[in-house]
Amino acid sequence: MATIPNNSLRNVQLYLRSYLALLQNYSCHVSSFNKRFNDFNTMTGNLGSSTTYDLPPLFTTAAGLVAADQVAAQRIATLTVDQANNTSINMSAQEIMFNMKNGAEDYRKVFAKSGVASLAQAIEINVAKNWDSSVANQTTGALDTTSGPYRFYGNGTSALSSFQQLAEMVMMFRTSGMVPDGLDIYLPDYIIPGIVGTGLNQFAQNRNNDIAMSWMVGAFGTPEDTYYRSNVLPTHSSGNTGVLAQELTVVSTNDPTGANVTQITLSGATASDPQAVFSGDLFQFVDGVSGRTNARLLTTIGSVQSRAPYQMRVTANATATAGGNVVITLSRPAIWAAGATQNINTPIIAGMKILGLPSHRAGGLVGGEAAYLAMPKLPPEAPFDSVSETDPDTGASLRMSYGSLLGLNQSKMILYEIHGSRVEPDYSSRVVVSLTQ
Image 1 (cartoon, rainbow, N blue to C red):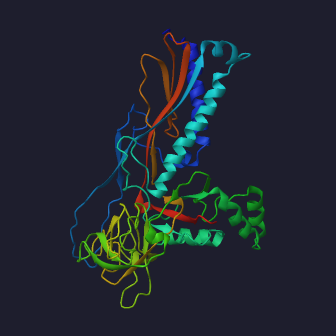
Image 2 (image 1 turned 90 degrees about the vertical axis):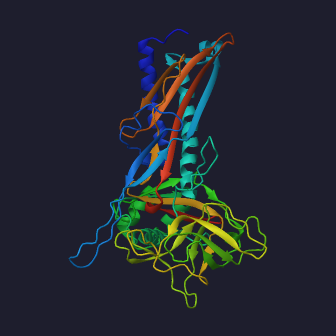
Image 3 (image 1 turned 180 degrees about the vertical axis):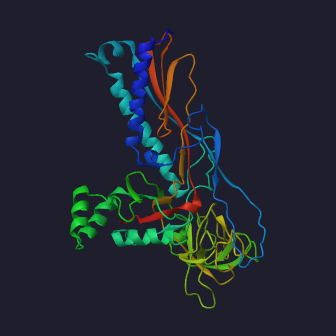
């Protein structure tokens, strides 16, 4: 196939750069997720390419002047590019000659622009699934259960409809000391008018003027917090223990010492229920159980008891036994043993109770730029003419390939992208929105 002249290739590159901007503008997750990695997004990558990044190390502080030596443990997380999408446009030679030209303008640009909109939506839907912890590897089909929040705000029944609730949501997240400022909050677009409406009912003239004109939540709270509206946030389907609001009672754990609890055996589920618990289900300990300490999350630094209730995310489906017992597997160990990793104020013992959430819409909250999106540059697609562009400011990459199918009177233009995404559990929270709202 004849090589496209240099001046045409430059035009294609210019088009592709403008398409990158469209890719960002169509998608709040794509535009706001952290895509700044050391040379990873600018390198040529394929499906399966991975990069690592550091998480802050954890230490304890001892009273007095006698030093207690601690091991310096580096915490590493891995982000793998395991998603791919393309938009393909077929044209015959006649269509190119008679339909794809509009005066001096190549109408293929218009088709490509719509193709990018479709591509952006596919990426956005996939990345938003991190809030439900359900992003599946396209090759293996396995869910990445290490990504996404284990904490949450909302009960899946009451409406999220006021500025006061947003303030409480942010406070409950920050009270554990994980992220002091700079939060990104992703909410379903359809709940924004109700929140704005309740704000307008309060007597705060200057603020009301602002939100009335913008008709959005905007930067409510601290100046560093930003709220985004999305119409593609995932719906989480809960197991029957959550749907039926079954209060489950702790029978035992895999570690009676409380040093590393990763599985809890519970009673109270429907006998022999094959859908008792689903992967991604969220649970919280019930307060006020006679003879049992209320379970609370400890602060990340200092391991001080916070106001936040101890919450958990499940990483596997679970079936109830004939006796109504069910075993849940936790995404993050509950650690009572004293030390830098201690995260709960009491051991998990028999008689404690937990309650799961019903099915709900899953929004999200993340701090410290701990939501990651990698979009490496794709290699050329020989023998077809292709060009790849990476936005140096955002790290987003896109490839366009063009070629003819020999003897078939057809030309094809394809837009490609590959990506991988991850939300760090310790720096995020699920925003739970009732399906009836």
